[in-house]
Length: 248
Ligand code: ZN
Image (cartoon, rainbow, N blue to C red; front, side, top):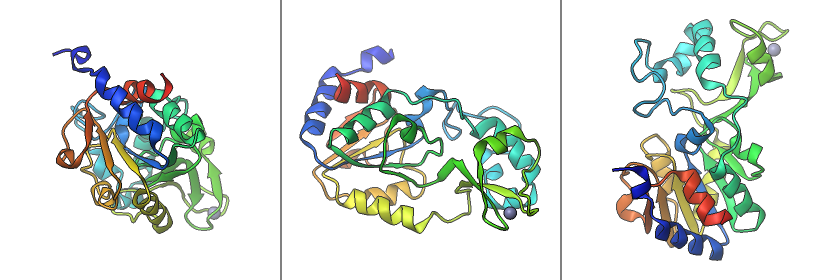
């Protein structure tokens, strides 16, 4: 079946009606939001390293691995996780527009690419941190991501400490302030859109449970465990769906 055949303009119009009357939309997004910007989802089939011989990304992107093999970590990180030239796609643009016109209160994202901010979004809770922020593990001094890209090997601070990206690695805790902010936004939302994520990764699933509004909308290629709770499910590409529902 072709993708085109699956597209359902009626569902996009239905979403548009919901969003037009909403006041506190919260968007909860994952890697699928950024694939149209050329950033591969390393967890999905056909994503990064699906067929390669290397260690699984989940292992390389763990705290233990970072501490034991920072050189190999940075090798992988620079090559696969930094997409500084990527540009926002229509999904990011539509959400920024929705916030600017007063329908959306917050974005909660699992992505570290900063594309929502690049598109103009202001209230963004980055559950897994941001590749754009980096700091020294010893003295806490901040470093620009360009410093990370420019060098080779393990980047060091002038104090001698190792510079670490402000991204939440496997085995690490999420930032409490970010989590509480996200939960507060979700609990106060009238519409929750979950897009580009299967909700399989902690803590996505648990956070959706705080939603008490009427419209739970899922925009995802594949089924999720939350499909039975959704009031609207759309399987089309998320950039197309949000462009249709917000900017048309
Ligand atoms: Zn330092």
